Every structure is written in structure tokens, then in C-alpha cells.
Length: 182
Image (cartoon, rainbow, N blue to C red; front, side):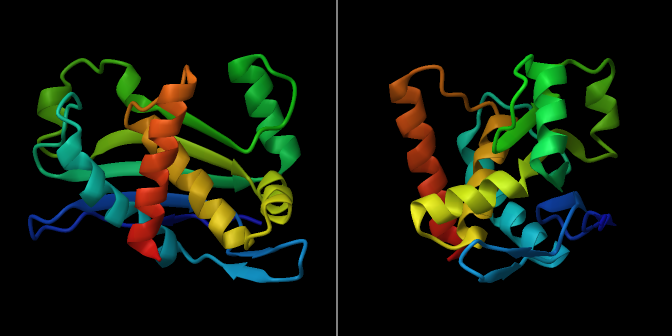
């Protein structure tokens, strides 16, 4: 089932986000609970997170018009395993993948981003893995999906966790982001 939605940036000078969501709006956890995650819910979360994170990212080429875009795809273990094999050469499912667009230079990007949103990249989440991890952790699947989405966003913005110290810093930032939307 596909649910493609695209929002348009606002013209009022506030942060604008173009978001495409591809996936389910309703996810059932192993405990029988259901998470309703509409396009507007996802959009609101990403907007709040970006508002909180962008001022901290002095090394990031920020959008001069304060407009950003990203895509979120909710898939199953088979879909994410194919992506994981193709792009990371790991033939196994994972919980979240992030494909950061800011890692590559686009010729003429200064001119383009005076008119167009800055593309942050793509986040892909396996709902199957999120459901299992939520059950293992003893929390709702909605909490797991938001945790994974915030993790993916941090990767799009340049965060990484090559060592334990970096991982702990990233996890602390994710906790802060989740507190913004609770």
C-alpha cells in the first residue's frame, strides 16, 4: 500500500518542509496496539525536529530560504534488505537506512537553493523490524517508529556513530528530539 503525500513550502519566512511519505498510515504492534501515523503527524514531527536542530548545525549548508525537503519510506524487511544489500553490501534487514543528499556537491547549488528547498535525503524504515524492536523494548510501535525516524534525520544532517562516544551523543540527541513531540 502506498501513501504518497507532498507538502509545499510556506511563503511566510518560517521553516518550510516538503515531505514525501510512502508507506502505511496504520501499523499494528505485536501487542495488538495500533499506531496511526498520518502524513500531517510525520510532517509536524520533522518540522519540529528541524527547527530544533538547524541552529546547531553551523557546518551545514543551510537553505537561504529556510526550505527543506526529505522523503520517508516505510517498508517491510524484504524491501529494506534489498536496499541494505545494494547500498551497504549487507544482505540482511535493518531497522533504518538514511541516504544523505548533503554528502554530494551539486553544481550551481547556491543558485538552485535560492528558489528550491534544500534536499536533505531519504529515510527508509522497516516496519517489520520496528514492530519487533518495539515488542522487545516493551514500548509502543509508534515510539519505535519515531525513534528510528529521528535517528535517520540525524544521519541526513551529518551525525554518525563510528564509536561508542558518538553513538551515545546521537542517542542523547534522539531522546531530546522525542521529548519535543511527546
